[in-house]
Structures are given as C-alpha cells and as structure tokens.
Length: 283
Image 1 (cartoon, rainbow, N blue to C red):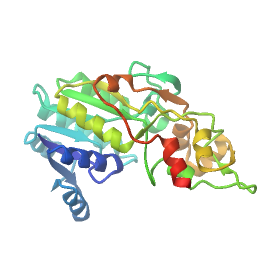
Image 2 (cartoon, rainbow, N blue to C red):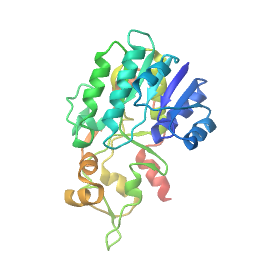
Image 3 (cartoon, rainbow, N blue to C red):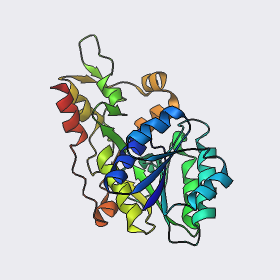
C-alpha cells in the first residue's frame, strides 16, 4: 500500500513508520523541516514537506494514497485545530471510498475505571477533553476509520514512564511516586502498538474506537518498586506543582483495561511489560 503518515519523527509515529516500512509498504511521511525529512528518509520513507493545517493541500495529497495514519500531535493548545484540519481533509479525500484511515486518540479519554472498554462512557481529564468531538465527527462520516487509543506508551529510555526513572528521592533514598502510587496505568509497548496500527490499516476496515493497551495495567507503586527498594507517595498538590495541573491530573487517573477488542482482530502484544522493562533498566 501507498500510505501517508503524519508524525513520523515522533515516539509513536516513528515506530509506526518502521513497522510499515518493514512490512513492505510505500510510506510518505509529512514533515515540516529538512532535519525531519532526513530522519524519515533514513527510516525508509519518502519525505514530503507540508502543512497539515492546509486542508486543501492535505486533501489533494491524501487522494494520491491508498490509506493514511495520523499520529502527529503538537501537545499544546494548537492540537485541536490540527486535528480539525486533518479530519476535514480525510473526510473530503476518503469519504465514500474504501481507503482506510487510522487516527490517534488515547485511553485517558475514559477517565477512571478498573475494566475500561471501548463502550465505557468518556470522562476525559481537561488535558484531552477536546479529543472526543473530533473523533466522533470522523467516525460519523462515511470513512473507513479507526481511532486507536493508546495506553501509556513505553520503550527503554522513552515515554512517560521515564518520569519515574528520573524521579526525585526522599532524604531516606525512597523514590518519589506520581501521587500515592495506588493508581494504575494501562500500558503498551510502542512496538506492539505499531503492530496494531499496521494491522488495522491493512485490514481495510474501520473499527471505530480501539483501545491500544497490552492488558498490563500495573500500579504506579509497582512501577516504582521495579526501580527502587523503597518508594514514597506524593500529594496531588506536589504532582500539580511539578507537572502542571492538566498533565498531573491525567497521570493520577486510575485505569485498567485488557484490550480485548484489539486482540479479537488478531493483535498479540508480545514485548516486555513495563514492570519488566523498568526492572531491567535498574540492573
């Protein structure tokens, strides 16, 4: 397939790029700089400089491809406008066709829950409250679309869990957790996640909301104990002070999910769990 990819130099997008190239696809990666162009070219993609907020340009570019994956996210106040433009372009270019499109959401959309599924009512924290409206507009259109919703994505020396690796220590040497540590994080290894993106894209179908979680949902305390002999909880106020209220509240969510729907499609996550990964980094 000839696939258009956004975010090809990012953590998730880079893994998706490698997976698609390894699977023999012809990948065009949209970039914004010469440096990014060099990075995606080295990974085996064709770099294309462009502005994702230019709906006319993106629509025309999409029409030249068999499918597309959107992983780009500025992670700031411009994120909603970017996703608005991408959804507009995809609906224009792929609406009424058989061309598949994979969008990126996130498990935080569902709020707290000990058995989260795609049917769980959304209860997003402020950080991601903007996502659902764009996702629903996409899924309500005549597009073969899937919104992959990753958990906390990890890989050695990468991802949100590095906050724990580099966390402060108390005077007694205990590793300071994000909050009390009793909350759980639904997790996924980035390479397993990339395989899910490739699987749903090449299925040629739209799967609606699809949780990208491995089924491993450790408590933050367990993650800390994989890194240190002793851990210490912190207050919500401390988390807000160190990480900001919006990001902090997302990390304080208590979430567990098994990803059964993704597994029913034939996805079989097999990389090390986050606990094992952190334990190995300590050795």
